[in-house]
Length: 204
Picture 1: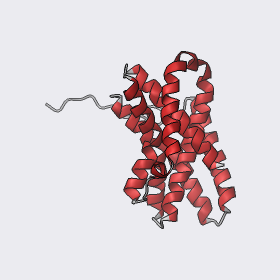
Picture 2 (picture 1 turned 135 degrees about the vertical axis):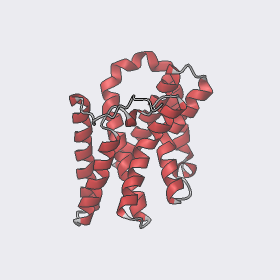
Picture 3 (picture 1 turned 60 degrees about the vertical axis):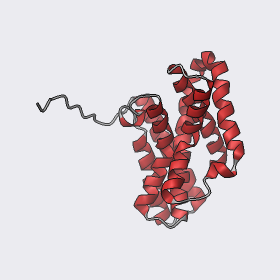
């Protein structure tokens, strides 16, 4: 199940990257780069940090074709995509959860500690979007507005907690996925946000 969701997720993330590039008036090469980084950047950073080689997409060139094609297709259909905003939000939420669970699983399979596994899951879930925003000269969305990174954190903690309780891996994955998706969708529709910190006073 996670593989299917993963393929959907990298496609959606590539399209979101292409839209972000379009808002910055990038050329076609820029669109392709941002689409690729957004879709596969999180997993790449995770693998580099954990020493998990070879990096996943280097063994699956079809992933490269998929995300770049999705990014370029977005330039053609962008004017119609506002009609699919809700669908994209749901698919993006599914992708966040799938990325987080995959990242956790990779770290645990390599016998990393629980805290490292949680960080690996979060890196996989959010770093692609952070790279997209940085390359597009924006403060990363996950750091300023929505319950996004925190949802990834909850999913990772839930997955590892159920694992420690001896829950079957497939059931654990299903429960963690459902719980994370529910939390993310409730956060979107309810406008839930973390408290913000604003400091304007000058020191001179």
